[in-house]
Structures are given as structure tokens and as C-alpha cells.
Length: 604
Image (cartoon, rainbow, N blue to C red; front, side, top):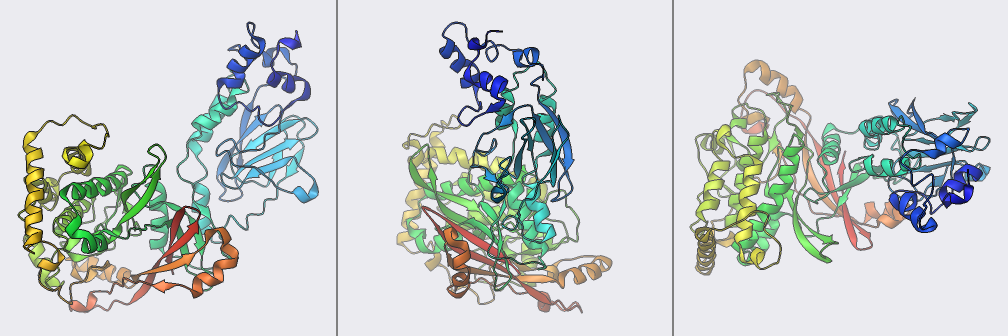
């Protein structure tokens, strides 16, 4: 066969048995277009053919294959891809990050790995073949000569030392479905062997990877299930549209031993504080934009079949996000604090009850389990707070009497400037019958439609999601804005217009087990469960993520506390039970990392 008719890639593989950097084929450029331009008319006889001539004309058969091996991290089975050539590429197939040599001091440069994706690239120097292992394992065997090479990866900076956390972190990197697809792909002998790179890049689907970001070395520290709940929920509910506060990784404070979640820092604070500070300037157009933003976050949570269980204005956060396609920074309302969230399939009636009384659905006080419908009730209360700038039932004591009134149908009074369409949706959300409440998709669709009718949206140049042609709705929005301004001028609307907040109106999440009506048999069980309830504390730190090790001490010494503390409610009702509580600490840390900021959440 005339070798001069082959392109550079195929020549390298057939004669030098390697792929060198900058020629790896992630797309069709090198395997088709490059060859056609290189040979003008004829093209490469190997790459430009649908069937693999490499397999037909080379005795060693350049056909890829696959196998399975047990991971040393969590004993799950992970895939191995056997390449019949020496892969000398310097970046990871999945994330394009630079690969690290596993043992550079031993001058054994045949083993590389990606610390981010946990993918190992190990070669046989005798046979010039490569094994790509999609996970961490202790050894690799050449498929041709059967030589075994041992793999010793230092996971000090990638593992916490806590089995529960490490098991979860590893699970965010291992995608069994994608690995099965790769294994099946290698069976097809008619495909160009080089196209396996493109296939892996396109079809190795993974969600957000959560990393271990070390402060120091530590072991044997207990974690609470609330902390792990939030970690898992943030992972499963993560989306690329920034509707939920992003979690980057996990670490631990070396002095207090608190575990940390490294998260985006919401510079704009929470919705409650925002309304208190800027309510007079917030137009109806912006109110609808707020609803549109955070309803999408709840839609993502429900889409992933999770329930938030603790929706209130303190958990809705304002972030400044850069949108590359728009080349500008925009404000976005995101949902945070998923520590109490649970899969929707968890419908046990005795699951733990935390919350803020005015935002908790009435059926919960009667012993029902949290549900997507109870999330919608909470959303309805946030909608009312957006219209008034005030917290619901702030002027009364939050005790058993308020709960009885909520069960009996008591709801906050709707303001005169509220558009009828907004008021009707709000009342549907807080309907006493959960089955009569709208789904999050119905709420979101309504919010998007109204958003399209506002002046800011219409003249922003953003195309409509759906066709909207309703003069009545436009007129209603314009009238609502006029009435809002008039009520503001007369001081009949806004935080300053209501009477002073009651000293026993508590707007932080707290244990509500004492208020739940249950059969005696269940009540005795839940009493034990709620003995482990915790308080929430928010702490804010200055922190430099680019210098983690050197600044660990400064982080702990320079923090300033801005706390929201919750107290158990067991003493408010005499049931003959005593609930002790431990503190659950949630900390937010500002992290200076170029133009982005992140915050930490911690848990004892």
C-alpha cells in the first residue's frame, strides 16, 4: 500500500505507533477535512474511508477494545479503554485540562492522570499501547503482553479521609451509563479507530464534578446528614443556567473541624434584605423578573424529583453573573440552602420538620409529608412578600395560635396594586388543598408570559419565548405600576407602612416537631428523632482561594459573624417531651478568585 497517500495521523500510528500532541482528533477536521486539503483530490486512504483500513492492512489490527476493573476508591466497576497505539497527548479527553504525571520523580512517564476527572492514561513501553482508565485503580495490565504496571496515585489533595464524603465525591466523577456507551462503541470494527476520541468527548456525559479542596490533612471527623443532604442535592439539582447556587467542592476548617461547602458568593444578599432596602424602587417589572428567576430554580429542583422543603425569602439569593454571549454582567435570583431538601420519593409522614411557620403549608402541620405542593405554598408566600416588601404575619406571635389560623385558611391581605393575574396565581399557590395548587411549570409559564409584557422585556431586544398578544394584561401591568407609586407616596405600601414586627415573630428555619399533629405511636418515635435538631448560623469570612494553605489560619481569625439563629420550639407546647438541640453551622465565606467570588457553607 502506498504510504504517501496516508495523512500525518495515520502515518504516525502505522510507523511510529503513537499520536503526538496537537493532532488528536476530537472532530472531523483531521480525520476528513485535513486529509482532503492535504492530498487535495485523493484524500487519505485510511481516514477518508468509512471503514477502518488501519484494521485491514496492519497485521496487529488497530482495533480498540474495552474492559472493566474495580475502583480502589469505592469498589465500583470502572471502564478501561485499550488503545493499540501510544497516546502521547497532554490534555484530558473529557475536560481538556493538562494531565499530570503520576510518578515524575521515577522517570516513568508512561502514567498520567487528570486530577479533576479521575481518568488515568497509562502506556506499555514494550508494546506501545495505551490504557485509558475511567476512575482510580491500583494497577493496569497491557492487553497485548499482559505486563502489569502498578499505579500509585497520591490522593491526599483530592480526598477528605472521610469515607462518606469520598464515596460521594467519587460518584460525581463516575458515569456508568457513559462508560457502557464507550464499551459498546469499541465493539464496532467498521469505525475509524481514531474516532473514539471524538466519541468520548461528545458522549461522556457528566454533571457537575464536586472536588475536595484541602485546608490541611485531617481524619475521623463526624458529619451530619443535613450537610451531606445539601451536598447531594446541590449535585443532583445542578444546572448550567445558574438557577441554583453552584457548589464547587468540599473542604474543612482546620481549627474548628467544620466541614465546608465551597459555593458561589451571592454578592447581592438574600431577597428579604433586598426588599427591605430597595422596595420603594422595585417596579412591577422587576417583581415579575424576580419571580421568573427563582421559580426556574424551583422548577429545576422539581424536575430532578427533589423537594426543597424550606423555601422562604432568606434562601433566595441575588448573584451577579457574567453571560459570555451577552458580554455583560446580569443580576440573577438563585435558590440556595438545600440542606433540608429530599427526593420527592421520600414520603414518610414522620420525616423531619424544619421551617419558618408562615411559609409552611397547612397540611404539614396536620402531619402530612413535605411535597412539591408544599413547596408551591411556600412560593406563594414569597410572591406576597415581593408585592408588599414585608414578611407574612410579621406583626403576630409565631406560635400554635398562628398555626391554627393558617390551618383554618388565614392568609396575608393582598395589596391594592397587585395585578389580578398575579393575585389569582398567588391565591392558587396557597390554596389549603394541595391538589388545587398549580405545578411549578404552570407558575413558571405564567411568570414568563408576564415578563414578556413588561416594558423592560419588550424593549430589551430579547425574543419572546411564546407569542403574547394581550392588551388587557399590558394595561393591567401599567395600572399596577401607577397604583404602586401612589401607595408608596402615601406610605400605605412597603416595610415602613406596617406596624412594628412582633418580637416573637421568628423568620428563621427551626424545628417544628412540637407543632405537628401525629398519632401517639408516631409521636414517640419522632421525639427521639428531633432530639438531634440543630440551629442554623450564618457566618461570613474573607477568604483567598488562590492561597488556600497559607490563608487557612487567617480565615479562622478574621471572620465576622452575621448570624441567623434558629431555636427549637418544643417548649412552646407541653407534650411531655424534652428536645435537646445541637447547632448546625452554615458559613459563607467571600473568596477572592480573580473576577469571581465564592462562599463556603459549613456544618459541625
